[in-house]
Image: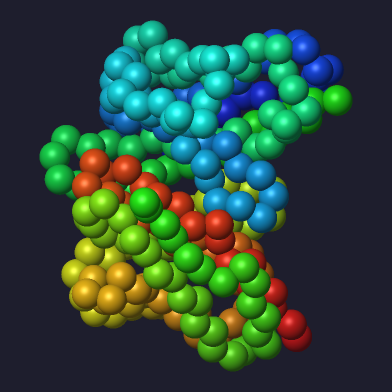
Length: 116
Length: 109
């Protein structure tokens, strides 16, 4: 069974460095979401794609964050010039929606980022 | 604005019953999810409600009242492995999920 996978699982970096995370969704899913989660909080929406199109990006997301889904399959999330406040768990989720489904999202294991 | 409220933390005893409440305010409403999240792991799906009433699934049940903007998750015969955070998420008019901060459930023997 190929669920949602994310790579790497853990990343430690120094402030100011760039990092890139990868997410491989469930193959038949057309939607892919990126969330950020800190301790004691629910997932915070960052952005989502429907196929290869990025349809929405959180207003909280600074210009240092960029995401791509070039072929409508895997996605990458890049953070440039990392700051200590970027330390969090970055979750990817995917779903299949073609109409008025309820959009159950399946989550990957997350990438835990620590910025020193 | 859009808002989800749920208690920050609850404590219950092994074998007992616990009810976790969630109230929501969203622009449009297309249903409500409950997810379970163990520490350091990703959220996993528990239940979905779109119509008023109770949905039962084994030891877990979820209730929805659309007129009151209210839902609860009921966990019966609590086990130690049920210690986790429980996230309430409402689906808005754009079919986006609005997430609560989660309720940390602590089970004591």
